[in-house]
Image 1 (tube, rainbow, N blue to C red):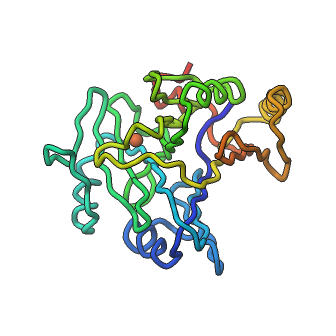
Image 2 (cartoon, rainbow, N blue to C red; image 1 turned 135 degrees about the horizontal axis):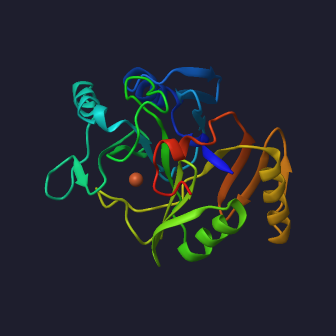
Length: 262
Ligand SMILES: [Fe+2]
């Protein structure tokens, strides 16, 4: 099964800008740096990397889950660090929804970042990491033309579960990983930002080789080509994926008390 988002690679137009934001401001540790790439390690089980390109960018959306007990501290910390938190149309910056709360901000490339906490999450299961107390990367956004087709493909190939399903939106969930699938016509909250598909490679952590073999068989059925290179690489629509075996605790989503953990 898929346990979590293990890595995300995005394009940037400035490695220096990315370094100033993610390392100097958000304090993400750097694990690798070269002329055209930089890799950060926000948690032990997730790496975020950027590749410098000379081409226009479409901003990505990602959300980090933090403990609910740390939410206020983290928001104060972001404000103290002069990170500009985005406002809803009524001027508020914190959204209190039924099961949790969140805030949004952007990096220098316009990527829409979110810090989110949920009341139901059991604390003490995963260690909070860094200044933001990140437990894990919860969400990556995948704007698509056809939401129904894309989410059904993720269900078929990766065994995902669906939530908040409509014609123009869905969450596709594997372990702690939530793929947010909006129609390109549905704008991102809270600043009504156009949902364009970013160029990215999304790495999922999986429990074992049996799951990878099952995915290979399903990719064959769908006539989707793949490559094995220490992980299983393939594309669905415009998005690149990689599955690799990690030692992320496979029962984490159960212990965290996530609603879609069964
Ligand atoms: Fe989100």
